[in-house]
Length: 370
Image (cartoon, rainbow, N blue to C red; front, side, top):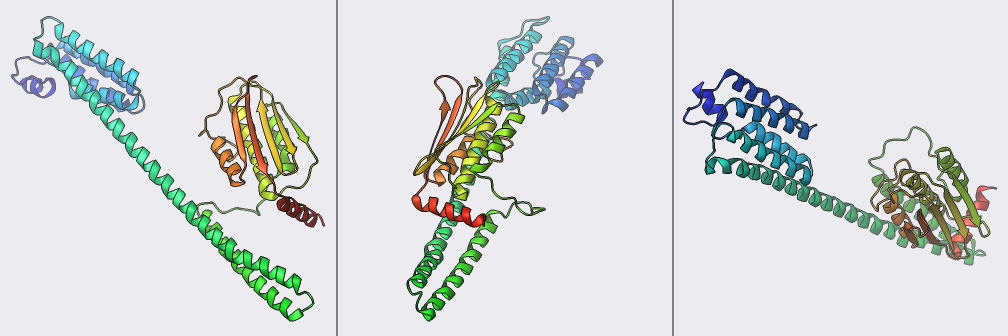
């Protein structure tokens, strides 16, 4: 038993005989470590209780074994500072209490548990800080890679628009100006067709890169929703348990597909956030047509916790307030979000609409209904 006293109980001189009960308690104290990853606090409490019982059963000058070190380290790694501080204080207190049973410990023995606890907790905190820094650096590198890829794609799209589509516009204008000269018109139309075909091919290649990670679609893609689908969105919101009203101000007119899609997505994200965060509430969606812009407002009168900037809007396929802001910025608009003075939360997006875009939207709308 002297060998066990040396190996398990840190008794180099072998002055203390280890009883069978003490040996079993020390061996049993290792069993809770199996749950240290899923339940670190419970495993630590069990280890500490068995370790103190072993110290009472087998009085030793020093008893801060590897099992206790592992369990305390697991708590410090997995739980916040307050829980870790309580665990460290409990470790020091109970270890000192175990040393005082039946004898008076020396100063060197009394300093053992606090110093050992400090080393274990300090090491765990250092590892936690290092992992947070690694995760932050990894996130920054990923964001930088995404930003660089976005800039590359933006440059390539700009080149396509600046060269091919500008050429198409010039050729179309030249054909119209020389409508009475068939040979000139024919050459212009041939160049126009070739530039259009090349532009479509290059843009399709860029879109294929952007969709490289998407799963293949089983069926044909559905048409993108727009402002005309807000009534359906409001009806779905009512069925989901959020009383919602829709109002439209100003003379309705067709919107460019991208603007209509942005209006729909902002309303979808905002209503999803209202269902998640507003609690028992009512919501309203207001669409206002101005001569040179369109405004979509989504308001609720709830008293829940407002969504955070990085919160995900689950179920809408978007990225919460961040996604709304990016969509609005794409059109050069403004987005205002925040609590209302009389309670609730408001999302207001203002999207500019040029006369050219409005005219093109009307032409597209008429062509689709012929």
